[in-house]
Image 1: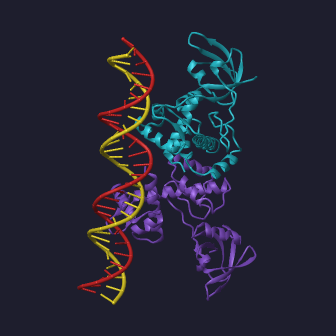
Image 2: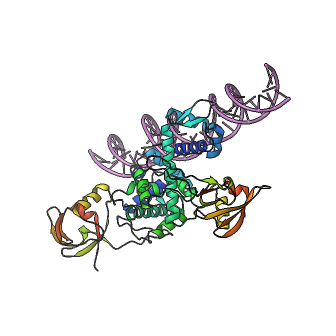
Image 3: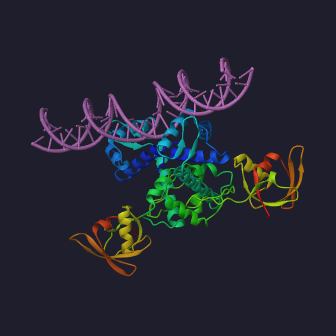
Length: 219
Length: 219
DNA sequence: AAATAAATTTAGATGAGTCTAAAAAAGTTA
DNA sequence: TAACTTTTTTAGACTCATCTAAATTTATTT
């Protein structure tokens, strides 16, 4: 079995390669994991020897099929545990990340499959991120950032791009949560802020907020 | 926070000191943990330096108040997770030990307290072992081994002394589970086996089985 | 293209937890 | 009590994941 540490590297590489397709840089991994580039360099050699990544010195790295499968399984576990924490133990969506980071390393497919069934086979985690199925397949939702839809278009809040505690708590203060229906009422070119109507209430959201909020529009 | 390894040492020392009061020997710990005496010796020095155990070279060891509190918290987590696995995820009582060994190291009192509430504050785990409360207090049940009750006495099965997979599976084959009512019908002095009546069915249990089955008798 | 800057890798060291082999202490037996 | 056995500890070495400092490669700028 991959160690705790190896799992974290694979997860980090997966996450970074999603954000910016192409090889992932050593420095980026170091920053994501909170370690030094030298340490990452060492580890990349080891991961490569284990056929978990494709790696050529100075060239950046990508996951192999095997590495990606492991990463997806960790993400699957992370997201299912998050659902458990929110749905069953009443944690808030901004509280569950760190706990899920621990729980995701519990090593048992049987456990996670039963947990999935117990949770009624959820397809998305509390932040709207899709949960990979047993084979590692992710069904992505068609969703766009609030910045990408037109005035008078309506949509349903389906997820967040930034799932930091700070952003989630900000959304809470505004009463914005997954499933809310909203309509873009006006776009201010000056600062790219938008006014929206959410559950009948009007409010203004900054460009930064709109960039990080995903909605599904009706056709 | 105590490391995974330190937690396992404390748990092992706690368990061994319950079985045989007095100091716990280095060899016993080594066997319990599946490591070598030399390794344990090293670790005992470290635990002692951290004031988790009382330790004098060649003398055996006991937990300090601090060490015992940590051990009890781990046992609390272990047993609550076992309840979760059996009650919510439908694992059998012989399947949950190893998973709970992993889950018990998840580091969050908030998590475990919420889990406890979610499980309706169970007082015993699936093997009948008592669950320490938030302060580490264990409410022991008055129970005795089947070997210690007289012919014609009745009792309710409340726990097992041996919670090995093998013993639990044997009990399953005999249809014996926690909560069953039974009466001792006869004791054979020859091999100390007993015949009992359980849910109306007569059966014979060996001395070894009787030693490892706890019952609560009516007054 | 040469010089400079940034990113990456190598080299050598550290701490945690483990091991084997050997030494020392405690316990047992003749 | 002397000899032997068992238990425990010490000594020295190994692996994993990390670090800092220095060297190397790649990228950028003039």
